[in-house]
Image (cartoon, rainbow, N blue to C red; front, top):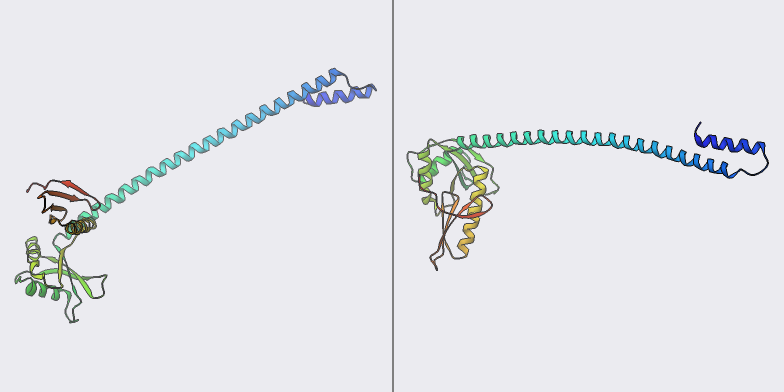
Length: 242
């Protein structure tokens, strides 16, 4: 039996044995017992609260540890994916090193194969008699009136010859360009966009090695060399010929 219950019971028993009101001492004992009882309840509540807090902190620590492990595993997986992407693009780039893209109006003769069409362009338009291509296949084009054909040359020298003789296509609707990786295409698009910008400002512009812009102001004679990373242009110097 608690102190408060004992004090209340004592008070009731005292009332039974006498008719007068409880004494001051009995009230004092009752208040003391009430205070002690409240203190006991508060102490138990604090203990229970501390225990819940400890359990919650343990759960939070466990959750943080689990999240940390998940983040570490995610970073490892992302690193593996990036490595695979780089390796795949490198392998693809090596396999496509002698690859060209031919863009032209849709042929009216539907009986011609893509390979026949490309070889005719090489022979008649590019004026190259002894250059042949392989692994020829059509590509999907965004334009309804034009088509794209991808083809590989037998070697790098043939590829260089074709690109060099593209000057004969100047007044035609045929375009030939080297195959580019996504990163190379991004840089090329950025270079072409800035080339137009500098030209519109009245500058003389020349592209070097697909990623450099040589810009000359005809009024002042100042020359600047820029390199593109696909997003920004940075002033630089031309690379030393190997």
